[in-house]
Image (cartoon, rainbow, N blue to C red):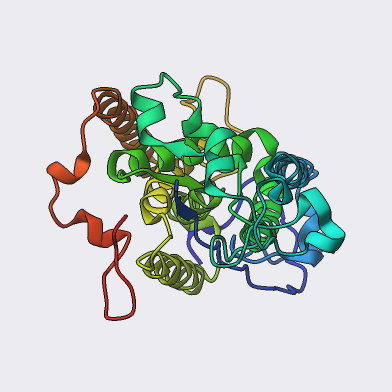
Amino acid sequence: MSNADVEAGGPARAPPPATTTGIKPPPGRYSMTANGNGSAPYVPPSPFYYDNAAAHERHHWSWLVPLVVIANVAMFVVVMFYNNCPRGGGDCLGRGFLRRFSFQPLKENPLLGPSAATLQKYGALDWYKVVHGNQAWRLESCTWLHAGLIHLLANMISLIFIGVRLEQQFGFLKVGLVYLVSGFGGSVLSVLFIRKGGVSVGASGALFGILGAMLSELITNWTIYTNRFAAMLNLIIIAAVNLALGILPHVDNFAHIGGFATGFLLGFVLLIQPQFGWLEQPFGSKSKSKYKAYQIILLLLALVLLAAGFAVGLVMVFRGENANDHCSWCHYLTCVPTSSWKCDN
């Protein structure tokens, strides 16, 4: 064990036995068409598993993630209320007992939700309305809407599994910033590529941001964790599988990629942890930094890339530029046509 693995300043406690459970991956964002005492030092467990026995080491109570879940559920109920499928006629699913909360026909929305027109009216991401309608607020509002009950449940269950653990370790403010800014970053990239009347909704850009922040948190705090390589491999596989699923039709993979990249950079800035404990030093001696040089370098580099990325992206958005004109193959990142489906949008 290297010196970096031991916290200076007296004997440390032995680690408690770990009981770990894996996290679940975030699902896709949906796109629709508008139509004890001892001598052993304590080493933190892997950041990608919840250690119930070591929960006393954390000092944060998770309340933000449950609040976000409640807010998303409430928004879905409100949207379904105003959707009022029976008013428009047609074969509404569950019309007999759900009444105005009944779902659109499965052929229109297989995720058990409202119509695309209703989502567009109440804040879905729409390129034309953002650029020409002065409705930039849609870049954030779309992350609080969901295409259907299945979409909502998948996203909220994933948020609970990966968000609660992170909030307990780093607190609501940092995790909240990662969630909100990553969702915004995913929307910026999405609106640069998604055109032809398409609308996009879902919290998965923000969820991928949390996933990206977990990866960068492991990298920047590398020396204080055990099981580092196994944890990194686990996280990379989760991210890769979910990004690969993004090539299916009606999944906005640009929101996933943009959210993941934003969260990855934010993790270097917000989730950095001291590599050493406080050291007692003689009076007048030179103070020792609690952070390693590589951590500071990564933080500064991430800040520069974040500022540059948002500046360039937002300028392109409000100038009405189509990113597909600058990248002829990028559309394959969100949908790959096969004999089973087409990629019209």
